[in-house]
Amino acid sequence: MSVGSRGGLPPRWRHAGGGGGSRSTSAAATTADVDDGFTLERFEGPLREWLVQERPRREVRRRFATVLREATDGAGGSVYRSRIRSMAAANGQSLVVSYPHLAAADALLAVWVADAPAEMLDVFNEVATAAVLDQFPAYGAIAAEVFVRIADLPVVDALRDVRHIHLNCFIKVSGVVTRRTGVFPHLRLVKLDCGKCRAVIPTPAVTNGGTGVVGGPGATAPERAVLLCPNCNAKGPFTVNSEQTVFGNYQRLSLQEAPGSVPAGRLPRAKQVVLLGDLIDVARPGDEVTVTGIYRHNVDAAAHARAGFPVFSTIIEANYVEKVGGGDGSAGGDGGLTDEDVAAVRALAADPRLAERVYASVAPSIHGHGEIKRALALALFGGQAKEVGEKHRIRGDINVLLMGDPGTAKSQFLKWIEKTARRAVYTTGKGASAVGLTAAVRKDPVTREWALEGGALVLADRGVCLIDEFDKMNDADRTSIHEAMEQQSISISKAGIVTSLQARCSVVAAANPVKGRYDASVSFADNVDLTEPILSRFDVLCVVRDVVDAAADEALAKAAAAAAAAAHPLAAADAAAAAAAAAAPD
Image (cartoon, rainbow, N blue to C red; front, side, top):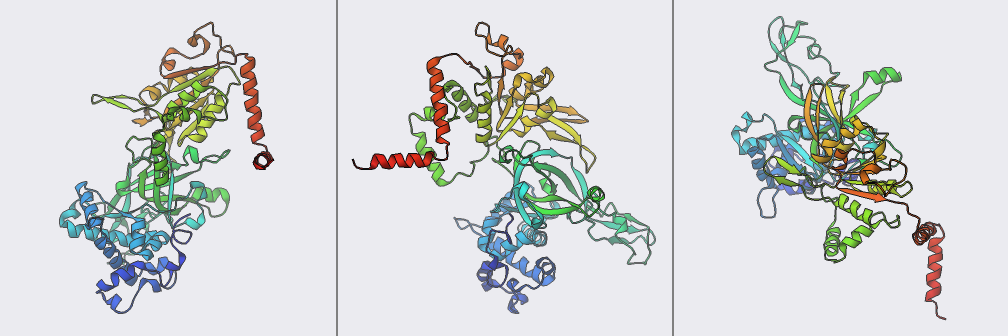
């Protein structure tokens, strides 16, 4: 759920008596509004309608300016003056404001930016622009406007849990980018020329049914937004003044639930994300990102015609996008580790038998197969990529092939990895094609342009790609993953798109022998229907044989019976009774 009315800060701050920041700034108040006793806590009517009035906007502007001015770090320096200097050094347009810091400085502003983000961010952007120009007067020649980006929103929503109550509110979602369109111009400020008197007429924002994107797909033509010329009262014709009209950058992403977060038996959900301004190209297909933005509705004429009643599609207008793991090539962040977790990991690192404990923790429900568990542990941890010279890179991810007799838990190993790894994509040989494993080029339904859509290897970037029934794949499909398994990239040259996508993942595959059972009298290559180039890309080849051995079969049967008994509903009660009987005196 989103912050504000559905969580985060207490709802009592929504009305009188909550503005923690008003007490800290009241001593410095000099405006007539403060002298007249005007406070934001006494708002009346709907919040969004009230915030468009000049007097509340002026008070919000004053209080947010105080937050930017008085925020200090541990050394006593100004936090946001330092961030403004860093932004200006990079010629950027984004001033990142931490939501917990804003909540601590002025709780009311923090609640309202979650409930009415469009109106509040409009004022915040004005304050940030003024603060930057105050520090760097000539910065207007580089960026006409500075945007406030709200980071560290405390509540994260799942894509499948976003509902109508989140409309026009701030939300934070995470997922994997599966598709990215090109960059297109969109209208931010439209000016028209009157065909009669040649006067220049500014027009109101022409948006697409609530998306907030001026001139977005489906928007009203700007020439039709003006009925009369205010100078000569003519009804037209009007033409767009391309020199004075202000354009911005526009791009769409398709954000899909991360593979590890999809409930069992469910299809992954996806949402369209709109990127504006300097957020363009912040992520590409395969990147796992966290998006903070405004959840908006969008007029969908096609869905309306099909349903027979008004139906709206939804988008997320991004305000802040952060890559999971920072985008530095690491495996992806710390996974939300607490201080206690870090201390436990450091204590575990001192254990001399750490490697054996790690190997034993791999698929503990599967009896035996110690060498295979060791190989899978190596694949999960991976190695360190090496940069040899300036343009040569040696991968650090380990590829593993499990090949052997049927019924030897090969698929169960893959399923365990799918549930354990932070990022894993599972597919099967017959259910995977070359396009499904690498990348597809599809026509975007909105822009009608060709766009890339990542496949399984791209979605598993910095994770593990699991391929079951590897021997059942077509030779052409297996050939398509040669580059991905060695160079860990996928080169695309289709529909006028020439690019390369990252596929930095370990590949764990399972295959069956050619004759159904493994023949120890011939070589490994003769037992499997795989070519030498594909075999050379696997670092570890594991053979699983079902050998007749009375002692091993008895141990396996006992382990299976013990696991079944432990899962029985009465097992816990029987164990407690046995423990009580053992502790009782004779």
